[in-house]
Image 1 (cartoon, rainbow, N blue to C red):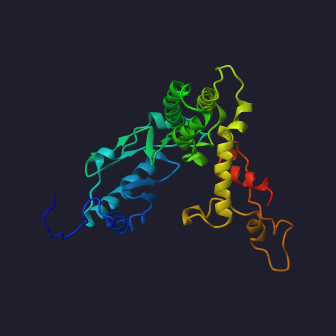
Image 2 (cartoon, rainbow, N blue to C red):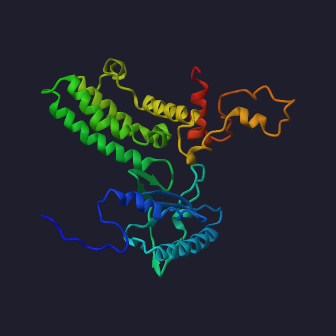
Image 3 (cartoon, helix red, strand yellow):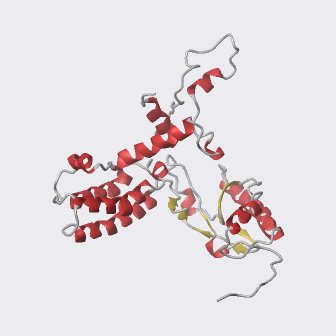
Length: 302
């Protein structure tokens, strides 16, 4: 079938090759606001922080009016049914203030729904920032795959099971592992248990078998080693300037710190150090990508 020709005064046909490119160009100036903005096609993430909740509520509502005016001026509209907001706090903050406060965000007399967990680009981010929601999501994916391996292990070889492992299991563990892999051991344990059970199924071992010795023959990494590998890849790309602009301040070289304010005739002993600054004073700081990545890079043979 062939449709007739129709004149287009604005916009682009849905599904066209130029559609995504032209849309990105169209919304390119949206980040010019007080929000920290992350854009991926038509998925938009806006972030704003303040120590006082009342001030934060006022700032967000004021900035949203500007965003709404921009959308209207550019013949775009906000999908209120898919738009939510979430209040987050640091890991060291044990206060229940966020759970009890009456925080409200609205624009055009329409209120946004508050949530404690939001999914962005396939990653679940919870209000406590401990990655527990995403870890449970990964666990559910692995549990379904575990049942499949149990059903087919008697009719396929170990090599075929390995191929299925990388297609159905490893891809979920690897995706954004650098971020959610920073979760504590207690949070990650459910995924580690299911992951080990899958390998026991592949190798025809019972549930009480010690699985540690089976990783190397299968050429499969443990959960923690997958995280270290993905973090090492990130550090390698950062060191060789292969990452995009938003990542340029993720790490800071020790040499850059010791050269600040130095006159050419005087440099500290660490001015030529190629490692990255890793000094932190809190337990929350020690689990960040900036600290773990710098610490890992310092232990790699250059």
